[in-house]
Amino acid sequence: MDKKTLEPCFEQSPLDVWAAQCGFEWADDGHGPQMRCPASAAQASLDPGAGFVCALPDLGLITVDGAEASRFLQSQLTNEVEQQAPQALVLNGYCTAKGRLLATGWQWRDDASVNLLVSRPLAHPLVRRLSMFVMRAKARVRDCSAETVCFGLAGRPIEAALAALGLSVPTPGTVHLGADGLVALAQTPIPWAGGSLERVLLIAPVQSLALVWSTLLEHLPPRASERWRFTEILAGIPRVTPLVSEHFVPQMINLDLIGGVSFKKGCYPGQEVVARSHYLGKLKRRMYRAWLADGPVPDPGTDIDAAETGQPCGEVVMAAADPGGGVALLIESQIEQVSSARLGDRAIVLQPLPYTIP
Image 1 (cartoon, helix red, strand yellow):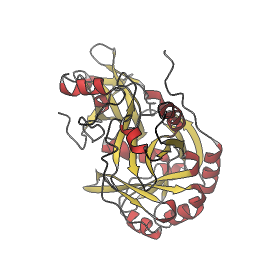
Image 2: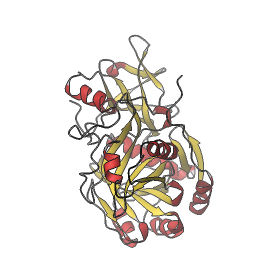
Image 3: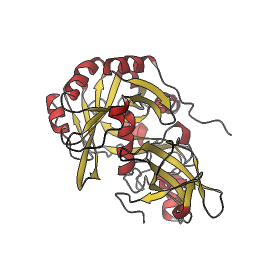
Image 4: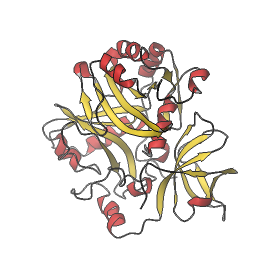
């Protein structure tokens, strides 16, 4: 296999400190480093009334500052940067010249920088690659993953939890920049138990870890990192991790359907391929939500096969244990083959996405 453009890596020592302070253990898996809590908490049902909080060491922070930071990123990413509204939160992608996604991430701005929350093992190699193209632009690209911690909050108690930290719950698609470096990123609510489950990503400086964690635990029970990934799957929001870096054109994982691609902006790496697929091509592959009845959680990049031919027709994008039983999946597949797709000898059951695939 050809060598990857981005060779994944991350500092382990900050995760040791993080895990010790939060009472978790961390371990690296196919989705990146994970915080794992006791089995009783990991298997607890998803209750919007009780909610939960997850430590998310699988997410890393890149910041780009300088007078020309926005102009520089405008020429690199799939979505708008220069025209991004204040307090807006957008999904963005970074492609190869062939239009294949190296990474995806949440983007927002503050007074000093443009920020990207990406798969942690890809943060440092992304910084190295972006820095190659800065040239004379007045911009500096930094990996701030070791300087920050990220948590996923879900359920009704998050309003009280954030208020205790001096933050309010942002409306979906927006950001609340709080005091002392705290940032709340509102995520799309997901349907659950006849209602909706509110979700927020919270970023804090690492020196505030003990205070932030103790405050969150006053309102929310802790869960393993995988629980947050389960909510991302229900929301139909893909995350490109090292095992699937360079596997997908944005449309193959529905990035165009969830606001992750601008077809009106100027050039960026892979733009011609992405635009051609949008304007001229009939798409043959898309991303779907699915479920497995039993068995282990597969890694990203695991092949799925068409039942008729037994040949690969797609692959796993993300997977997580379903707290109600089984395994939740996001899969990328040939459209014509997805209805009969299997993972080995396990039948794949398609589930509805919260948005429409045209």
